[in-house]
Image (cartoon, rainbow, N blue to C red; front, side, top):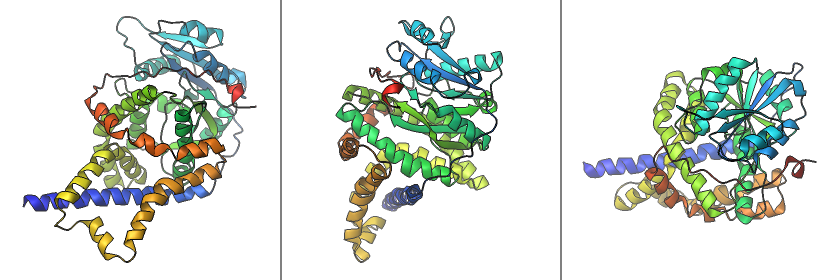
Amino acid sequence: MQKLILVTISNLAQVFLFATGLFYFFLSFRGFWRGEKPARAGERRRFALLLPAHNEEGVVGLAVQSLAGIKYPRELFDIYVVADHCTDGTVRAAADAGAKVLEHAGPGLKAGKGRAMKWATEKILAAADYDALCYFDADSLAHPGFLEAMNASLAAGAEAVQGRQLAKNTGCLLSKILASGHYITNRFFQLPKQALGLSATLHGKGMCFTAAVARKYHWDETCLTEDLEMQMRLIRHGVRISWARDAIVYDEEPETLSQYMCRTIRWTRGSLDTARRHLPGLFSRALRLGDIRAFEGALYCSQTYRFVIVTLAAGLVWYTRDSFNLLVWLYGRLPGMEHTMKALSIVPLLLYPAVALVIERARPDLAAAYFLQPLLGLLRLPIFVAGVLRGTDFWGRTEHTSRVAIADLVE
């Protein structure tokens, strides 16, 4: 009986991995065609741009300058820097750059990005009348056309929108490797999901919510990945997240291995926490209502456990090698399966995604750096273990050191 249970678990794990991989592989095909642009909106909405910052005096001024340079009627947007328990010159740097500064500090208030954004959102909505709120990071930069693109998406009926994320710094090998991944995610993941009516993923910066959504769905104060938590919560409540290709936001990538490890461990811990909170509800909504967005959201959320499932499946396949195993059976029975399996291991995982770099006309050095991504895969085990062992109060702040201005990226 015990052996039967293990064989069943083994085959279920194999089916999950194989089916999920095929789902996203076929989904990506839609990325070969550009999505339709929303029609230019006639009515311009009023925006509040929020930028939370904790001890970011070195980069916050450049971030505010990029927001102030957005080509949109200046009277229709305000820039707020939420100085979260800052002990350096962040407040002065933000004010000198032209932002309205909200200081989140004092008795009863604790530091934390989600907590600061929730506090600031409530304060801003109570004080002024805005149609929508956009959120950025202190290390991010906004393209001059950001608000025009967001305004068009809102005019088309969107309630929550994620902009297209690119890297602002590509001066070292690590940042080049990570920057190349954005091209693939945008072309073969975000664009197909937008075109097929699914929900985009939130990335913590370049996000836009209508005032109604921002008022109803508050930022979580404890999750280390408040953007992912908000993404899953919106999907669970039937709010679709659109993706705006022309609303470009530039993010800072880690330039040292310690920065990368620190950031990725925090993401892992937050992703595990988010999956624990929302995965049952997402599957429940998908089954009860036949909600394809909730189903895809559940699949995406469950990828947090992919490393565990792969390890479990491999171990069980070996342990139950004298019993029926689906992939082993397919490998041995279907004609040409040996070559097919090899192709499936190389083409979708390495060569096929690189097509996005060609379509998106990525720089040659970024295209070359993409093929070094498997090296970062060697860190998955220690990162996952560290993420499991860390508590939910571990922030693991990444030091931002890149001094790139929007003028360096956009002519």
